Image (cartoon, rainbow, N blue to C red):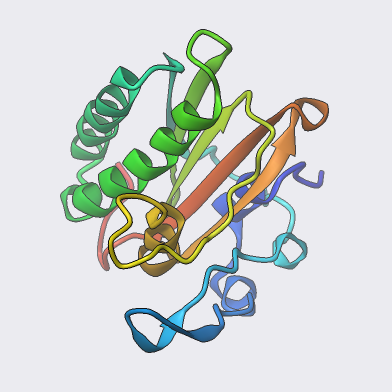
Length: 188
């Protein structure tokens, strides 16, 4: 059985195949030479899901409202603590804040919900944020005085991999990222 989307496939990708994903390009930018540009992981490099127990997962559906960003942070922090992933809480909460903020900004309040899914496998945490907005994320070069425009750049810098895909016939999207688990983190 082949996964429909990249984020579904990476929950069982082997390290050897995952490491073949192309790395981000380095481009000059306003913060100095050689900064990474955003280029999400290529979907075609991930193998089909392998047999075995399903990964640990947690899901929450939130309204498309600015208050949902804080709710997503609380949900993720509590779930990661339950899974014993204390070392990943800060990075995961920061990246989820960026993705949920983007979902809320690009979907008018009351026009749909935001779904957050966290999956833990033997070697990574995968987070997915889905919404009814059809606008796929892009990294833009923010000016030095800009208050926004750095969210996807942060995702690119911190996540081991990230990507996106359209859902609902192009009327929605899912944006995901993966963080590598710290060494010797037993699956509970």
